[in-house]
Length: 537
Image (cartoon, rainbow, N blue to C red):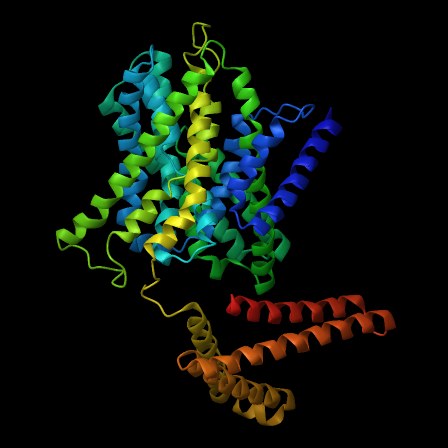
């Protein structure tokens, strides 16, 4: 049995890698492509039927995915755009849940208001990865990406809390709005407290104990699970715990790692882990459909498709209508200056409004609905809720995901934010850092530079690098002909790195030097090449 499960997991991973590469060739966002591919694979005869356990999603997948998203979210940007993030993450979730609750109650025979809120809580939160992965292929202002990522960090918590109270109302038959509102704030606030408490503990361990790069990396992998499990153990929001703890440790990341190697190793490990978890989640969404259909029971497919399409349309329209007031009202009231003066004010709401793709949290919430009520009877309309959730995910993820790049190109947004272009920022930062290093060398180590030939070479190298960096920065601010000189300079450097890498291969065959030292030199070349390629992108 273990060998069979291991083979299935390895096969899924291999399929994820192959399909992701194919998606890149086709220039389709890989979460969308994986869902479609998983759906197609699930109907192949002989393919094992896969049923997702909700505990696996909530416990195994959700904490690290949230933590990774929080880690790469800028706290300064998050705080700067806290108003639209909060209004989307809380206001839009509650509004969507409420409208879907009343519409579904009026539309579906035998559907109670509590079941309506249960469905609303399930389908209200958009998925972060889906939107950001689509937007990677198109250029939009950084603030839009920040708002979408910040919204997705918080809306999972608000939607899961709505889901939790609605589920209690269905099972118990009782619901008190004032009590639910009070519990919402308690559950959220205590989740933040627990997350920050554990984050401070991990900060102390990273900062003051003699950790190694491997230990630092392992601790970052354990942290989200500690935060999530601790909060859920006390019946508070595990999502808020992971998000708050992740934001805190991300903000302090420059202090907590024992070395630059620890930071590089942690980033590389998390990039791999995040990719694997995200890929598995999205292909599992597609593979889950046959199991959902098999459990439909008396609920007909035609009705399920009809209800699911109507709920999808309502969710899409609510978001599009909602984003315009939160963008315009602060400007009308004079409380907010226009942050994007290069674009008409309607463009950003159009993009944000269309980026409401649903994903893993919605499916995991629907799957976590219990099979039986307290009296042993079947949970009402469970299969129908599951099927409608899948329809909403499929419609929003595939239809909106595939058309989002078209919408972005149609509105023609320009990145007119508060910062210089990325390449100019990179050049200016490097110049500033080298100037600081040279100033330190001249003021504190004057005698050592005269006595130590190696330090003299370092000073000359810094002066030479500062001159090159200054000319590069000037060329980025000037005409096209001077930019071409920089491009030629980069091409020559890349060719030199290529020749040096070949020479390392020759040295490896000569067996004159140890493989360890050759690997170190190869890594230095890789870093230098990566810096050039990053700037060119």
